[in-house]
Structure formats: C-alpha cells, structure tokens
Image 1 (cartoon, rainbow, N blue to C red):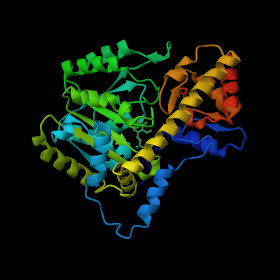
Image 2: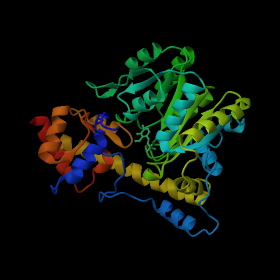
Image 3: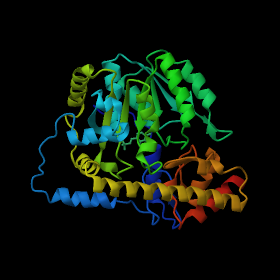
Length: 401
Ligand code: PLP
C-alpha cells in the first residue's frame, strides 16, 4: 500500500540542525534555527514563564479537561488586546475578537481555510523572499493562485519598495496580501511608517485583503506597541483584516504552540457568524487547542506585575540581538571585509539577510562548521561573545576566498 509513496524533500532548516548535531567539530556554530539563545549559547526559559509554570502546576484547581474549540477566553482577549492595543477602537466597538490557534502556523492555516472556504479567496501574495511555510500553508489549503511580490533588493541589500508597490498594484481586488507585522523573516527589513501608509493607500484603493503575520511582537524592538504599529495603523484606517499571532519567540514557548487568530471586522454584527465558522474549521482540523502555553501567556498578560516582568525579558532578548548586530558589523569592518555591512545593524529581529551567496554559505558550512540557510540568512541569536570573532573571521574568509 505504501510502496508508491515518494520520499519528500528535506526541510532545510531542520536538515541543517541535524547536520550541526552530527558535526563533532568543537567550533561549530548553528545560525540556522529560528530560536533564541543566551550569550552562553543555550535556550532560555523566561524567568517569568518558569515562575508562572510553577504556580500553575501547584494550583489544585487546574485540570486537564478539554478547552473550548476556540480556546481559552482570557488568553484570546489578552492576545487580541496585545496586538490591537488596549485603546483599540475595534475592541471598544466589539468589532474584534480572537480564536486560539496552534501557534502562528496554526493561525495562518485556520486563516487560510477561512479565507478559502468562507470568503472564496483563491489568490494570495507573499513577499519575495518570505518565511518558506507561507507558500505551503496556502497551497495545502487549496489556493491555486499563489504569487510573490518584490521585497528585497539584493544589490542594495534593502527593501525594494517601488518593486513591492508595483507588484501589489497588479493584484486583483480581494487578493489576500500576507504582510509581516514586524521583523520580516528572513530579511529583517521592515517598511518605514511612511511606507506602510503608502502600502495601506494602495491596498485600500485596490481593495486588497491584509493578512498580518505577527510572529515577533515585542521580540523585535523590545516594545510590543512599537512592533504592532503597522497592524494598528491598518485598523485605524478601517480595514477588515486578520492577524496571526505567535507566542513562540516573545514568550520562548516554541513547543507549546500558543497562538491567536485575531479578526477585525467593520461591523460587530458579523461576529457571531464568523466565530461560528472558525469554530467549525478548528473542530474539523484538531478539535481544540492545547492549554499549557495559553495558560502561561494568559496568566502573564493579565497580571500587571507579571506583564512588567515579561516586558523586561523581551527588552533583554532584543537588546542582546542588537548588541550582536553591532559587534558583527564592527568586526567585519575592522577586518576590512569587502562590502558594506551596515545592513546588519539596520535590520531588526531575529534574522539577518547577510547578502552572502550560496557558494559562500557552502564554504562556511564545509570549512568552518558554521550552519546557515543557503539564502545567507542567519539567526542573530546563534551569535554570542564566545563565537562572534570566529564567525566574523570565517565570513571574511568566505568573502575573500
Ligand atoms: N510566521 C513567521 C514569519 C515566522 O517566522 C514563524 C516562525 O518562525 C511563524 C510564522 C510561525 O511560528 P510558530 O508556528 O512556531 O508560532
């Protein structure tokens, strides 16, 4: 029965992590996987998360009954408020609500299913490049018209804004446009506020549907309000939209799959129907979401003191990343590595699109045991004060080889 199944292609990021694990070289560095590491190079359980876990584990009233299909209400309301803002007009007018999802990926999958089956959308545009799963999620859902819009100018190592606008201008009315809310993956380059305004003008004029992917709120700049600026701006303009939130990076809850799909509508009256259809979609996919991560996020966001501790944690993570950006740029400049490396400090969030080409990437892996994606994307969190000198010298060697 199974003999005709063909082996599928490896998923690059997981294959690299396996190759890294199998590598016995002492100097090896993993710059591929999208997870935070401390300066000691290890995963970090946020202290406020650990504390909350302990409190939940010792709370006798907590049990393991099923959650409702659309999740834990205090979690979805706190998540919705985190992304839209406490003073959001859409929340005040009861035009916004959230449903819990299996992290950011699950939010995207549920959103895609809803757009496809309920709103008859079949056309989606994502940036070139983008997080590679965007294509797969929408194509697996049944979207047959999948396009990319220009985003990265490889020669200038910056946003190709004119190209982006020109491509969005070609999108037909009703097309779904995936926008990274902040800390664009993989380039680390976001539009400026002025550019977001122009994107909104065009999307309003062309009647395009915004789907925000918000995987890095707070993790990017250390300020959740700042990182949600684009989403809130679109809401203030009166757009109906969806936002897919992940709590993997900003709470360090990668494996716990805590996510939220926020729906912003023009009229509160559509909520009952939309909510019911999302409920049916989730029911058919996985019935109901896991509770563990959502309980932690909910306990933290709904308690002012714990929330403040979380704010301190995201500041710590984002400033360590910024520090690594400056250090790497400074070291490359000091080494006299050919090229301009300012883009490393101008980018934001977990990733940097270094501009290294495939040959240089292969060289880094083979000769220096430094693992990164073939596009030249590196996870800044894989750098630390112990390995940055080694990595900078290796990049210098790769560029000058
Ligand atoms: N969207 C983007 C742009 C991402 O970078 C990621 C994770 O790397 C996700 C969504 C989904 O993450 P998760 O499903 O782990 O929450």
